[in-house]
Every structure is written in C-alpha cells, then in structure tokens.
Image (cartoon, rainbow, N blue to C red):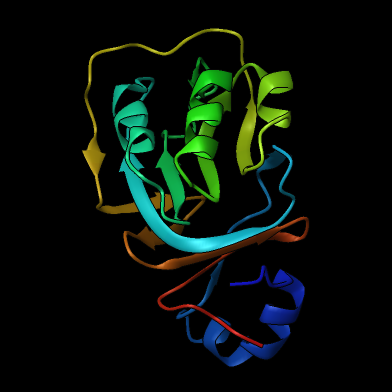
Length: 166
C-alpha cells in the first residue's frame, strides 16, 4: 500500500476522529530513519528499560508491519539502536515507534525504515526479558491495540482499527 498523508487522512476521516475510532498521537516524537512516511498493521510491545523482547519481535519477519513499543516514556536508556534498526529493515518492518529513547542515530538514519522516538540516549537498556507482546498499549494517552493500522509521516502518527484509504 502507498503511504498516505496524515493531514489528508484527518480531513477525510474527521468524523471517525471525533468519535474516537481514528486516533491521532500527540506530537511527541522525533523522526529518524530514511523513511519519512510509513504505514502498516501494528504489532505492540510493552517494556520498561529492557529491549530483549524488542529484539525478539524485530527478529520476526515484519511483513510490512509497524512495531509500536511502549517504553513507558523512559528517557533513561535506549530501547532501539543501530543494529536493531538494520535487523528491522532486513526483516521487512516498515517502521518502529518507540515511546522511549533510541541510540546509534547515524546508523538508524541510514536504514530504509521509519523510526519515531521521544529522544536519543547513549546508554543501553537492561537485558532481563521482561515485557508483554501483542497487547493494548497507551502512548500519550492514546490507546493502540495489536492488529490496528498505523500511518506516520512528517505531520504525525494516526492509529485506526482498519487500513485507511483516500
């Protein structure tokens, strides 16, 4: 599917935004990676300062999905680095949204995926393997469920129960 402009989607689906079916994430993310825009079905993770499960998920074939990582908004360490971004690119992920930090930005910016994160941080995360896959997460007060649809571009990030079209 072609990437869609989020502003146009907001205009087209205004009624669905009003009733809460289509949600627009708060503008809290910085953009990284070579893809400024990306869309795809959502896979969710909930972790805190631990990226073991992030790696496990990225090691799966992405099949055009967008990985949404609720890292609790922590700014104390990175959940995604250059090696994982390369792995995500090679395994067919369209993008990764991290409610937390990333590192190795120069490497991430060379990858042909889209990455959104709160900030960068040089410190690696813990390696305990604690977290939840494929559940409901809340980022910036927005509910995001596994299997929903995500569209992201320079204007923002939209979450929808199904794929949107213009």
